Amino acid sequence: MDRLKKEQFFKILEKYQAGNATPEEIIFLDAYYEAFGLRKDYTSRLEDADRIVLREALYQKLHNHIATGKLQPGVLKLSQYWYRVAAAAVVLIFLSAVFFIYHRNLQNDKNQQSAQNIIKPGSNNAILILANGQRISLTDALKGQVAVQKGIKITKSANGQLVYEPTEDAIDNDSSPQYNTVEAPAGGQWQVKLPDGSVVFLNALSSITYPTRFTGNQRKIALKGEAYFEITHNKTMPFRVISQGQMVEVLGTHFDVMAYADEKMMKTTLLEGSVKVSDHEQTIRLTPGQQAQVSQSSISVIGNVDLEEVTAWKNGYFKFNENIESIMSKVSRWYNIDVVYQVKPDPQLTFSGKISRARNLSAILKMLEFNGDIHFKTEGRRVTVTK
Image 1 (cartoon, rainbow, N blue to C red):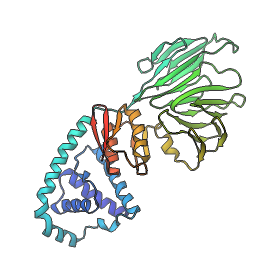
Image 2: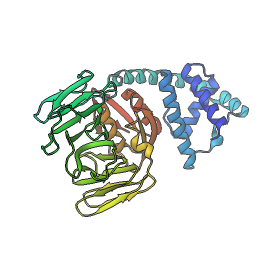
Image 3: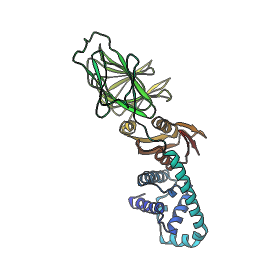
Image 4: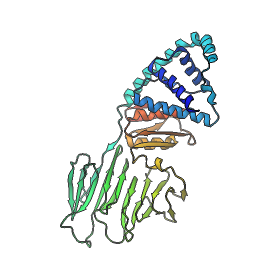
């Protein structure tokens, strides 16, 4: 589908959404969708931002039909012959039905969007757990000093980052460090600058446990969930991330570790530098662009990984190219929702798209509906995936 045809289709689609489409253009859209078995989601009247998201998702869906041979680009041509035949043959028969469907779907969309808009996106939200068990809400803490522990000052920076710095009366390196934990709940995220200057970006429903000072011949932390790491180089003190029996060892690099307990495998993706990934039986070394996948029975390396997709969460958006269950796992953590399936989805059916994590849940679900034959029903914080 070339640029002209794409713009032509969007022009008609936008006229319909604005209520300015001619009877012939309405028939074209209706016949087009009927011919190829697509849902008539073009009927929605939406805010400008939502319309942009959805029309791009719709175009992607049409593009996929063309790429797989299900649809020929020439179908989008609006010849004068088509207008004459369509207008003369079916305008009187179908026009009233089209407008009935339009108004019915419009009301359904408004009702669904009203319910879904209650569910807003996640935000910077986390809890700091000190060595003595004290819990501090980082969301509520003011900028400045948060706590002091054995020669370490913990502060919250202007951009919300948790920072560890030695105090003037810092104790000697021979004393045992204390351990802190930062927990980001469902619908939360946080940044932590560790005592060595390394930065950790914590995703929703994740936590890290780490010493307030790194001593000895290694820097070791524990991870649950997912985090992106920017590690300060220290050749004499490797940095190690422990998660569910897996260990990632680095000297100084950028990488992402996804190790949620409810996922089938752990994934470590390298962006810069070099890391070693180990399970109980073997060790492999990654180069930039590779991903280690560790399951209960094996460890493997995948090359040419889409790094933008892996780090999208850290950069404030979703980028999908996977099956619906994998997508909804990510969505459920960020929006703090429960997801149930009316019918078990086909794991081979993939959905693609890109959208800001700052959008309300309704925009995410709409985008997914446009990308495939799948629908959602929202009741409170429960989302049911239907066919």
